[in-house]
Length: 248
Image 1 (cartoon, rainbow, N blue to C red):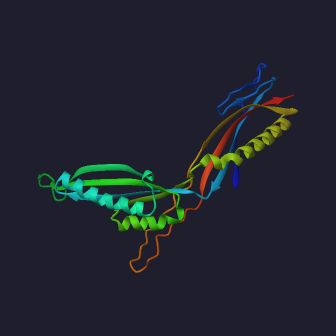
Image 2: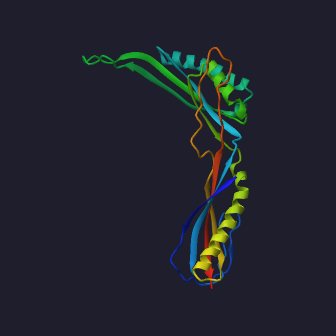
Image 3: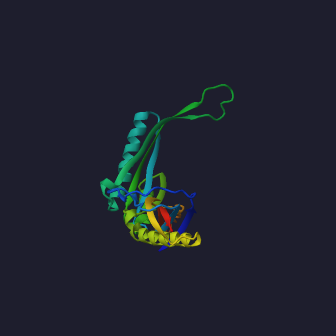
């Protein structure tokens, strides 16, 4: 379903010389100016809210050891287990991407007001991956599997559309019809007999617009119920900028 949002800005009256019709192939702007008259400019936005068809989850592990080598080795073993758990859920390797690896020394700064240097604790390694899946109904069990496999850093999920532009095909037609009606209304109110389309340019935002759904990590040891996840709907917004010439 769509929701129309209009942002209208009328420019000053400006007489322009007649020019031939122009068409730009392969671009998002079409111009056609054939008569003199004042120019009316405004934007029309259409929002399409759809059930998401993919989700992304972040997961990782953090390890600490006396030496950097030991910490990296421990982390690698833990990440192997985590990635194996992801693949066991039917997620392909190309949908698993490392998003960050960090190695840093750790110090204890407590009770160091006596001028003593901080106490060295060891080296900490954090490693994380981003997992993308189209199995929306499997997000809860996937989160549980990540935690069971040793995941210590979980974030997401974030929901979106594989092809957001496809969701906006109908919205373009709706926006153009609404723009035509609005332009004709301005022409009538301003004492003109009609309008002539001068230009259309497209802009918009795609992907999840509303706040990210919260994942309730309520895993009861006495219950086998998966973590509940509600995907809701994601909003894709199309904005078309119009210019019309008012015709006497």
